[in-house]
Length: 212
Image (tube, rainbow, N blue to C red; front, side, top):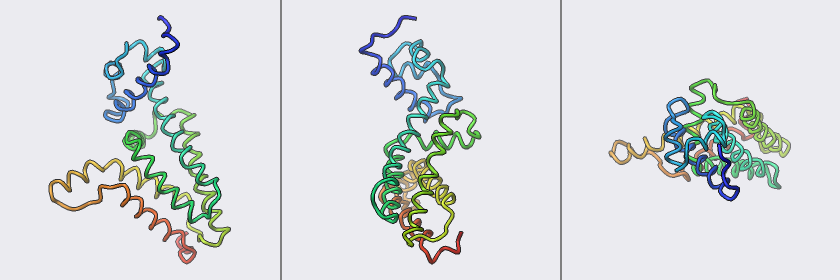
């Protein structure tokens, strides 16, 4: 196989990644096609194997980029200078905002959960495991500041991740319900963010410590 010209490498690889993101989000890993990805990326199919070795290699690259981006969006908030209550507000805002800016990630992760995570490789799993400790540190800071009670931070992690993934994934359904006049569900990110911030503040309040 001929090696791509050096100046075109990043652009070609980026186009393949973007096409892979769209394909995997729409169809899941098993139903996605390398031929369709190549057409969307406007490249020869052989270049997908050149850059990523396999469809699974491309899928892993998509997941790694997404998970890395999420960790990099949340970590500076937890490690930055602010009270725990302020950090919690920013954490929720960043989590909801990241999923809104990366709409492929919720369907990808929900499909992976339904499949038992069988396509997740070790680096992706290790990177994912960096997210709960961020929230653990934030809650520990709040307890030290006497502003948070003893609510289990792992349950808080599941509450936030589960709710944000589900809300981001069912946005098209909520829009359709509203368009049909069946109900008036929220369809804006700000409503989701505000509701989650309110819930997390309530469950972490010191007088709710008996919830742990």
